[in-house]
Length: 115
Image 1: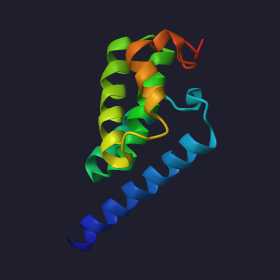
Image 2: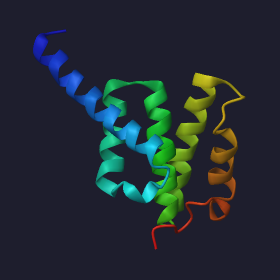
Image 3: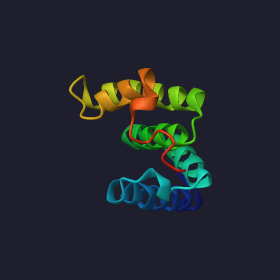
Image 4: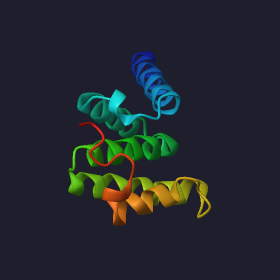
């Protein structure tokens, strides 16, 4: 990898670290804008980091659930569930949350939480 490509990757990873810290430090998804959610997803996809993809898709599912966009909730919850199980196995801590978002999004705390 050239030094320029490495530098770009390092910048993306730094931005990912910022978003992951924000996601874990502030469990309130409303602190992320739609643009930030999309940027986080894009960065994780570009860097192809499985645990990052899980976090970004979990965040996106909650974000879109807060807006009642159920098709996007399902899309992101399915990706998060699949990758979460592959990464951490069937005992993954967030598995029940993904099931709730997939099958009963109105019962998830993020449902229309952005007012």
